[in-house]
Length: 338
Image (cartoon, rainbow, N blue to C red; front, side):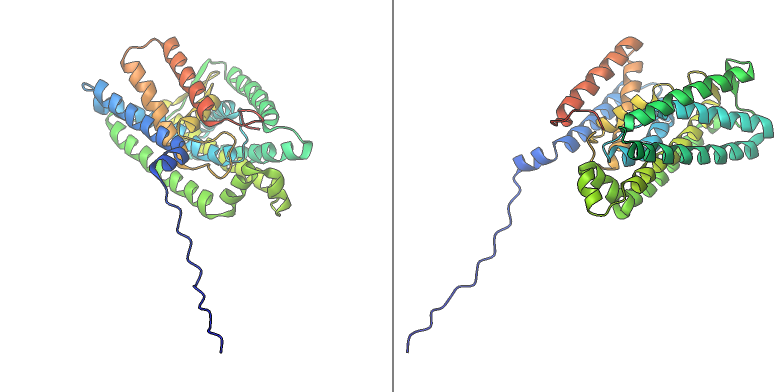
């Protein structure tokens, strides 16, 4: 009888080993952002030997506003979109909360103002998210409309008071409560970060917004309702803008025609410094909001402590912004979000 031919079982393919070079290449953006944060932390402690605790408290208060808004902006930027009306929205929301506070009085008035602002922010998010799909317009165009609209509203509200600056009444942070206030802000950042992380990593909201950013056409053909999830992403940003406006108000207690100016660019810079790809997609991450916000705030504090001229500070920020954009956002169809 013919001998049976013994066949060897197919060998299991060896898992591809990740070399240090490959790891560095795949995680260059993340490593750069973390390295930048570590660097500015070292510079901050090195240049703030005299008033360390006071300046640290100031950094936390500034970073809290950026962090909260940037955490919401992750949902929009992960789709490859942007919202340049953030600054003007912040200005109007702060003014509305002050007007409600002054009309009703104390914390009840401020809470009523916050509820009204939250409803308005959700409505604007829904409008901004859906209008671009319905009319076939880029997101920057719809947010540009909102920017001009809120700019006009902000001017009318301030001029209607007859004052250049309006102040929050009966709700103030006393100097002796400064440290406790900073602790409260850290708690707010942690809570918002945990909630945003849950929705971004473990729910359809984060999954679908990243899918839209990776390829909106493919996502739509896979059954993703583009209008619904774009609206949801912008509404998530709206909630965080409203909350960030509240944090800003408790910090400053005032509002005027220039309140909120430039916040849309600040948030974009924060996300880029944190390693957020402006084209969105699956590489988008919540950590970019926190890393970038604290890097940006600490950098501003360090440059101010070193007595760098304000114009030079803006120049340095512009150079850093340009370099990081060129390093991390290379693609054939452009650099900025859709």
